[in-house]
Length: 172
Length: 120
Ligand SMILES: [Zn+2]
Image: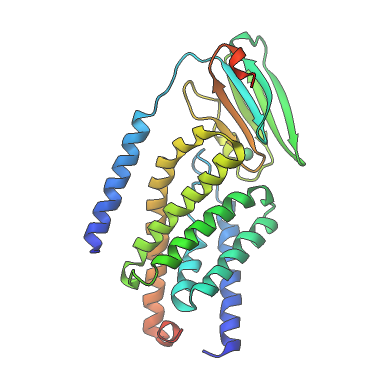
């Protein structure tokens, strides 16, 4: 993949992640538990991780979290999404070599759980309300469900694209 | 690890979490609530002493939460925080989780009666 092509793809992926993030925010939240989200833009992070590599995935994630926070006026929530996002990324980064694409959904679940743990960690620290730890079990369950969903979506996408555009992730 | 083992692990983890949720202690009969913003105690209200409903508008860094206090209950009834989890939470349930607005750093929670405990 040429440098220009790579940059274009990366920019496109950032845009897609931002759009997904914004659309998801428009959906009514189903629960009163802070932090439960489908995490659709996570599909893009996973996809980038396996196609362009960890550096690009971090770029997509960082741009989505920061620009997404500013664009949607959620600057107040930036600290929570950043700590969640970074922890989720860390797990992705450490485990992506050990978990094959076939089990991408597993990685996605682990990453979603750590995202929620990171978020709650920030929430407890900032609000100084240890009671919030009681949200952890709910957020672990939701992380498993949403992580499996986004992971399967990314997995499906990767296999489809490998079939049609095989070079996408054979040549990093 | 095999896919089957992962599924088993995740199912067990979910069961464990559900168990913890069911076993969560829910102290009943508390009537005093504390309102915190950005870690500061703003108000302590004994809900059993409230006679008529009133609202408290709280503005922090340009964002507002409107808290409605009525006899025996308290809720965030309006907010411009974006996520709206504080409004969706509804009234603070007996023994229930604190109402929290993460973006506006607002926490409303039960405290042990008597009120003296809240002085810290
Ligand atoms: Zn709120």
